[in-house]
Length: 173
Image 1 (cartoon, rainbow, N blue to C red):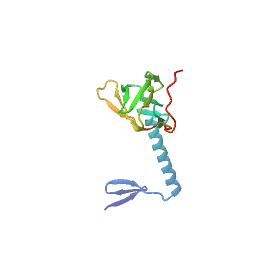
Image 2 (image 1 turned 135 degrees about the vertical axis):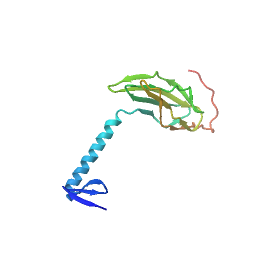
Image 3 (image 1 turned 90 degrees about the vertical axis):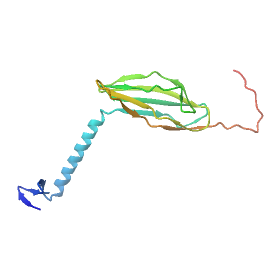
Image 4 (image 1 turned 60 degrees about the horizontal axis):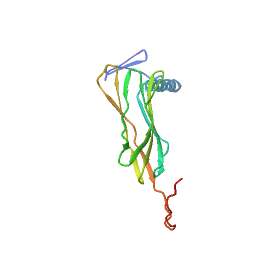
């Protein structure tokens, strides 16, 4: 291995390496600058990414009670977004009771599609609100890209019935 030293640089196997000065404060300061730059670089590009969010207000209900589901799909301007067409039933046991229109919110650099659903179940047990696929493509491009939301588990409890009491007739209003 050949080594040559000139102006605080070392030549080692045809690569130039900076010889550390041995000053720990200087090295720590350089490392902090590097980490700060990398974090800033990461956050600068994360704001232009696509994002899918499905939020539920509760994960435990009684039979026939409703869960509010908020769906958001954000993507940068200059792209086309495609919101999924959701059926009236989501899986075997979850039913969509009510849905809002898809709202388009235009912000500075982002477009947000938003829809709210009310979902219920008429059987007890654990049921999965499935993952929804969202598609987007760049303007002038034919390639489609897909984002998938996270699934959610909903626990549906049955109503306790007092079997010691006699059955009463249903009374109208």
